[in-house]
Image 1 (cartoon, rainbow, N blue to C red):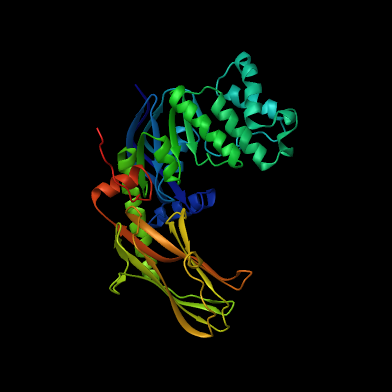
Image 2: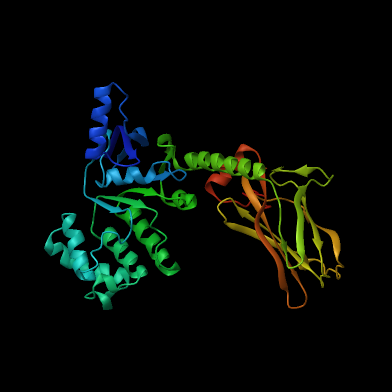
Length: 407
C-alpha cells in the first residue's frame, strides 16, 4: 500500500518583490495604454515530479544544493503546497525538517512534548507515557520544567529529535538531522533510526548530503537535479550515478581552475604532480597501478631534516590515508633553493572515483609545521566494473588479498 503518492507535481516560487496595490495600478495603466504587463518572475523548485512510497520503505533523497530536496519534504510535511499536481500522504507524519524549530521557547521542555505530540494527534494519556522516555533520550530530564529559551542549542536539537522519533508516527520525514549533538548522541540517533526502520518498520524519507549514511540506511534512493527527478531505483545503483556525476563535476572544475600556491614560512610549493613509473604525468590512474608523487618546492631558509607527509582524501573530505617520509628515510638538511622530493607508491588501492592529495611539511626536531594544504591535486581512479560494484557497496579501499576454497 502506498503511503506517499506524488503525481505530476510542480512547485514554483515568485522571485523578487510581491505584487502590491501600487504594482497592480501600474499594470492596469499598462493595459490601458497597450503596453506589455510586467508579470511575476517564477522559479521552478520542482518540475513534474512523480513517485510513490510503500509502507515500510526507507527512501533516500539526494542531489546537489538547489536540487529541490528540501522543497519536496516541506510539501510532504504540509508546510507548503504544490503549485500544480498532487502530493498525497496517508498516515501520521513526524517531520524532522529543522530539529528544534517547532519548539515554543516560552514553554518548558515537558510542555513542548505535550504541545508537539498533541498537534500530531497523540492522545493525552499516551503522551503522559511518552514524556519520560523522550526526556531520557534527549538527556535533559533535570531540565524538563525549565523554559526552552534557557536551553543550549544542543539541548534543543536533542529534544526535537527525541520528540519526533518517539511519538509513534507512521512516516518520518528527515532532512539532514542525524548529525545532531556530540558523537555519543549521534551514535544514539543512528541506533534509534535503525530501531525504527528494522524493528518498527516505519516509513522513512531521508534527505542527506552524507551519501554513505544514505547507503547504510536506505533501500531505495531518489536523485534530484535542478528540480527534476533524475533517477529512482536501488540505493547502490543511484548512489553510484550520483558519485560519478559529482566526481566528474569536481574533477572538471578543479582541472579548469588550475594551481598556484602561496609562500608559507619561507616554503613555496611550486608544483605537486602524479606520474607513472616511466615519467608520464597522470591525471587518471587505473586501480592498483603504481604511481609517483613529485613535490617540487622552493625554500628561502634551510630546512633541518624536513619531513613530508602525503595524504589522500575523497571529494567530500573523508580522509583515507597519510604516508610520512620519516617512515622510510631521515632526510638531510636542505639548503635554500629549488628542490624535489618523490613518494613512490607501489600500488594505488582506491576504488574508482575522484580523490585529492594533501601535503604537510615540517622541519626541525620539534617538527615545526611550515606548510599544510588540502585539495592540492585532484586525480581520478578508473577501473573495471567489478571494482565499481565494490566502491558502491563496501568502501573505498581494495585489499591486497586472495580467496581460496579449501573444501
